[in-house]
Image 1: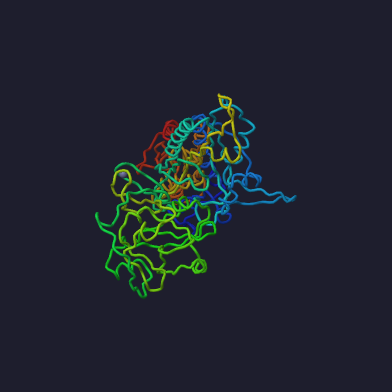
Image 2: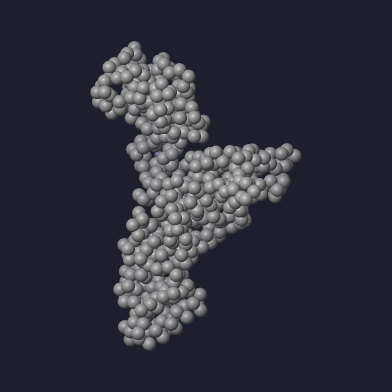
Length: 567
Ligand SMILES: [Zn+2]
């Protein structure tokens, strides 16, 4: 490819929208161009990388025994109603209606569609196990779409689905995908950490996310350096210890005046007690019903855990109107004396003795509130958010909070979908059974973004060998000199004939501009032809990862380039 003809120009300055070094480079190198929020075109250089990522994914999926197929983006709404995900994923579904008023969604994922395939294609245990996958466009009406390739409204995803006769079979399929994922990310030059995750709207059992740890990430994970425990902050467990000393005896409950005190911080400092000796009230609306949540004053509610504990789909903080309508007194709300309102307590609350809580009276709190004696929650569960420095549930060492970006996720779905959508098979005992499913996704564009983020220096991209859009970058200096042009053109032709993908900078630009672009674009090997190198019958070779270059005789340049450019 001649750089003079390449569709897509490099930029000296990153556009203002670029937030991270990686995103700046993606734009400066001319890999993609934004069409609207969360919607990007891939330019030729970026498209070559995306296709290489897809090829790596394809090779590893095929090696794991998965079969590639393709499913449509347009899916009947009824399928989503049958699975219930028209509601649980309502916030991201794109809806379309055809001219005959039939309603469809643009698939954000394909569990429903793949189950339809399964129902027609698989009858018997003899057809199982099977894993299928596709690499295909997905659509999410993403409210948080913004700059960058992480949170897109249209994106490419590899999604795979496994079907097994039982949970033992699912474990095997899951492990196959786990290993394939590790290899895919390694080949793409993106270090990932597998972390336990919450199965969220998809529903199911075990699930891992493969997270690329970076300060620029939107997700948070808690990691234990000692035992290797790693979990998404949405679901991380931690070791809890009561703040009340052993043997503390419950004292009689009493009202105390607390004028002008509305926060836990103010309450604790007013009374001279640790925040851990207070009980915080948080008001939620759960599927439209008021929910009173009690948690120790020094902790925060984890809404993913709370949603699970409360068994609800929609969960949000109450509005002021809802708080008043429910009869709560903000700043002094109390679980004591609550009637007809569902309550959830974090499991540490019943283990504490003599907490200070609200009195449900203005400017008043209650001292010595004890769960079980003075009130009793409808649900007691772990609903607390793990934080940096909290103790590992497995080994007791401090957990570290790290930010990152999810590159892929693998789920053990079990029979959630097969039961809802009646996907059964005839087992060897002649019984119809629901098939046991797993699903496995990788976002392709965000993998490109992470590959750039993880592989760059101050000059530009340093492509991992397997992702580089071209293996070699040929620079000709002095396009006004016939000898230079002739030697460069010959080398360009020879490299192509030898199967080396080469980007040839044949522009009439200064050495500074050409070298800067070569560093920015980041091909693994740079070859330079100039009057100076030709005076020694040579070509200059430089690896993108090296600071030094070497002169190689012209007649050996081809062999050296082939060797140097091979992954
Ligand atoms: Zn640990």
